[in-house]
Length: 280
Length: 197
Image (cartoon, rainbow over all chains, first blue to last red; front, side, top):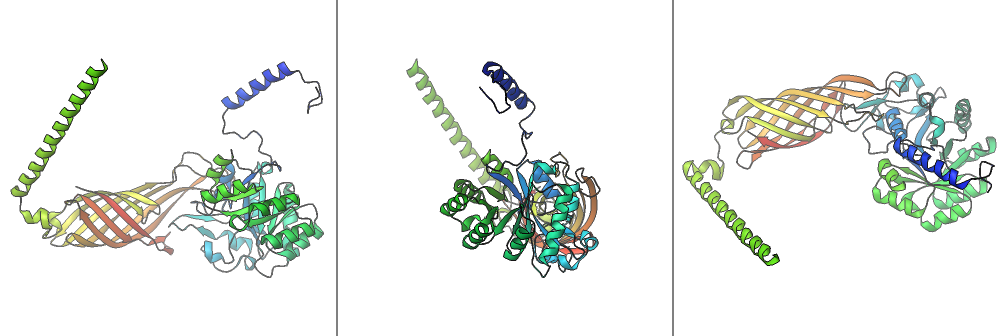
C-alpha cells in the first residue's frame, strides 16, 4: 500500500508505532499543540483583539495577544492603524481617548508619542502600553505558527497606498505572508491592495450582499460579518463560491455556538476558552 | 431482613424527627427568654443611641471598589463618640491568579486607610484609601517574560453603610473614585457585604 510518505505501508508495524506515538503525546501533555500551523480546511478559532472585549487585558495589548496565543488557538485578530510617521500600531477605536489616557487620533501622532499612551482598562489602576505590529512580531518567536487577522482601520484621510505599502513591507520583512489575513471595511482599500499586491488573503468586512459582490468580483479570499447578520444559507452560498466566511461579534456563548452551528470558517471570538473547548 | 431494616429505618427517622422538634422548641424557648433578659427596644426596634452599641470589627467582601475587581477587607472602629465613628481599614485583592504567560503569579493590590462615619443604624461614610498594586506586565524586552510593576494610587470612598440581622451583617454601597498613579481620576463604585463582630 502506497502511503503519504511514498513507501510501502507495513500495517502491523505502523499501528504499533502509531500507538506508541499517540501514547507518548498523551503522556507528554495534552496542553501541547502538536500541529499549530494554520489548517485552511477546518474551523479556525481566533481571539478577537487577543482575549476579547470583556477580558481584563485590553484588546490589542501585548498581554492580551500573548495570553490568547498561549491558549493555542489557530490565531489572533488584531486591529491596526497607521501613525503619522507611517508605523503600524495596534489600536481599535477612532479616538485615542476611547481606550487610552491620550487624546487625538493615531494618524496624527508619532510612534514615540503613542508608545507613551496607556490602555486604560475600565477597572481603576490597570494600565497597559500600546505596541506596534513590529514589536509584536519581534517578540513572538512562534509567530509563524499562528494566523494573524489584521483588521485595517482606515478611519481618516490616510492614503490607502501609504498604509498598504507600510503593511506589505512589514509582512515581507517578517515573512508572514502566509499567516496574515487582511480585513477591511473599505472597498477602495481592498481593491488597491488586490490590484497592486495580489496573492494576499483579503477579507471584505461589509454587509453580506456588498461583501459577497466585492469578494467574488475581485477574487478576494473571503468575507467578514457579524455573526447575527448572516444566515446558514448565506454561509453556504459564500462557501460554494469559494469564499471563506469569518464572523465577529461573538461575545456570548450562545453566539459562539451559533457560529459553530452555521459552519463558518473563522470565528473571531471574545470567549476564547469556551470556544476552544467547544471546538475541540 | 428487608422488613426488619425498613422498620428500624422508620423507627430511627421518627427519633430524628422527634429530636429535631425538641431542639427547635428549645431554641424558640431560648429566644423568648433572651428577649426578656434584655431591653426589648434593643432587639425589636433597633433604636440604638449611637455607634457605641454596634460591633467594632467587620470582615467583608467588597465587589468593585478602589481595588478594581473587589477585595477582602477588615475594618475596626478605633474612635467613637455619640453618632460619630472613625475606623481603620485594610484590604487585599489577588487577581488575576496567573499572568499573561499562564504562570501562577497573581496581581496584588493592598489597600489601607481610614473612614469617618456618621449615623446610627444607617450611616454615611467618607474615607481615604491609599493603595499599592503589584502587577505582571510586559515592560522590558523580551516581552514574553513578564515584569512586576508596582504603583501607588489614592482611592476615596463616599457611601452608605448599614447593619442587619441584629448587628451581625454589614451592607455597604459606595462611590469609590481612584486617582491612578496620583495623576488620573477613575470613577468607580463598590458594593460590600460582610460580618460584624
